[in-house]
Length: 327
Image (cartoon, rainbow, N blue to C red; front, side, top):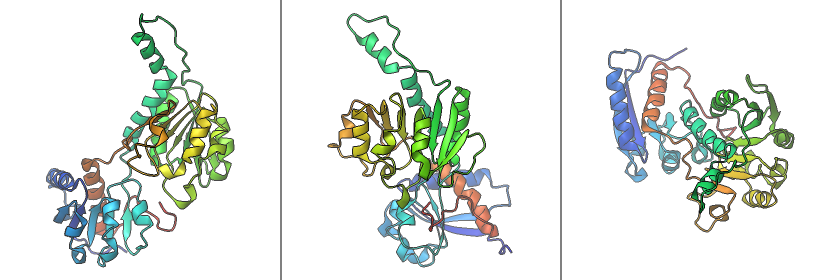
């Protein structure tokens, strides 16, 4: 049974983008002012500094997980926290579980499509090779080696909402899609699903692999040298999930042994990636600064307001995290 409708919803914003999120909330609420479905959202505090938060007054919060983790143990009246991130390890591993935590989901698919296929196409069409020929003295008119995506197999580790968003693009290029999940249960549009225990069989069937697994204790170091040794010499590995899934030394060794052609890495165990890390200088590694699919204040506001209407009516919130599962 749902509870009586809450006409007003006092909230706290704790984020590096607190001011921008507040602005987007005000803009969205003005646009929706004619609707009677949602509550009036009242912003009590908006800051990027945890020490400025009045913890006793926090009941509903929009927050960056790393900042929220510093104060949530003291927020005894907290009932719901809307995260500004897709991954929520700082909160899921924080010990406090007597509140509802919702992730930012349903907004990253288009950005991840751009990221993944930008790099797959760069290698498929050998853009670097043509750039080298153009820059040579004299320039060289040659047919640089290419390996089009058509007919190849894209392997997705972690076929959630973001992984599913890659599928239509892959199929439009004539690729087959295979995937990995904890259960290995069938997913519509995926040629074959593998359980996590079948990672090596999965790797042997993939031409290119994208990791989108969440950060859980069970994923630590899962993608190691044994896994990379199962890939094809022309394979591109893209990590846009979480950095702890990759055994750095195992990946570097596999690249040196030509088990795969290239690694595109957006996430790392330690961020920012230390300047001394060999990934920066390895010729077969591309490093990006955790920018594959960034949270945008407008998306945070949109997801929160949708859930705020549900919260005000006592309905189940979207994108709830499971503290027991770790995602």
